[in-house]
Length: 480
Image (cartoon, rainbow, N blue to C red; front, side):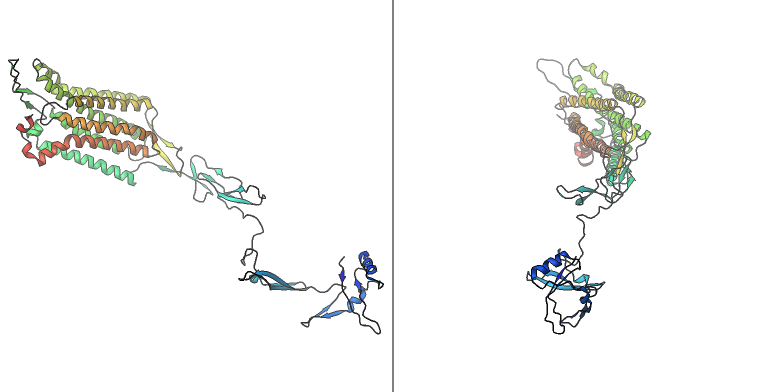
């Protein structure tokens, strides 16, 4: 019951203005207040209100209809002014049942004219999930983007869903899309770089082969075929004088075979580039293992021949070179290489490498690589190459100080040091590399070791043949 306490001045004939309390007819509160206010306890006269009208200073006339005045108000808004104080600004008015509001004139508590949201947090769009704020109502939350590989395809998701292993989330995190196959291809920068290095190595090897073939009659090249080593040993306690001993040392066949094997080493790296297939996975490891064994076998036999030549110059050792003639040299290279061939055949027959997709590497791409089904087979291939390389390094190190102005053992020693260093570093890099970079590491090791052998062994010889022809004489080569 609405009470209106006013002083109503009723102008009647001969009646003084009387203060009245206006309320409902059955209002207990009105009766009580009338008694408290004094002796003028009069009935509530709602029927007289219908005849009352009021005129505002603006000239508007209000009529009390049934005791209720018509609704007509100004809507004001407290607003901050630049001086830091507040002022009332009229932003609209109510006229009966009509509302007139100037929304652009309203200043909200945020200080702007933009209507604030009536919720604590906005809805989370697809691709995000709702994370409750600790210590705040449940309507207050943060929208967290889904992690890579997860999606949410509806509004206000409570959590993100993991994509299947063959799929990955798109950029918006709202759908799972198939992963792209990733492998070391000829079209990418890394593949182009390795291919260029391979072609360059093959070209340089071919150029060296042509140089040796063209200058095959010079002493530098002929020293690889038949080397006259003159030992004029004057020993006072012996009566023997050894001179003009003809021995076959470092057969040129080994040098040309070494160049051929180096060319195969460079070319086998191309098999590792491109999309893996069943046959490429098998052929790349076999080509790699056999090519390098052929190369290291040539160096090992050349080193053994160097040692045998100088040992045979001692008294009583003339028959030593019978065991290291051209036939024995070729047979030794074939024997060492056949062992690797047998290892590769057994390995590839029992448990060959095969192409397989690697889903372990997180990302939008899945790596297609050759998986080693048998680590033992791959270890035997590398281990046998390492055994021959270490043996060659040891023998070349022992022969490095043998008398000769052009002792090839020094070149072999340095080349094998580089070779062993590259492949010792290869193992941890191969194990720790992710995805297609495993293949890139192996190709890099093949190229680095091949370039090391080519430059260390043949670069000094080509330098003398092409740029220092005055040293390409029999006298200079036989000088101590």
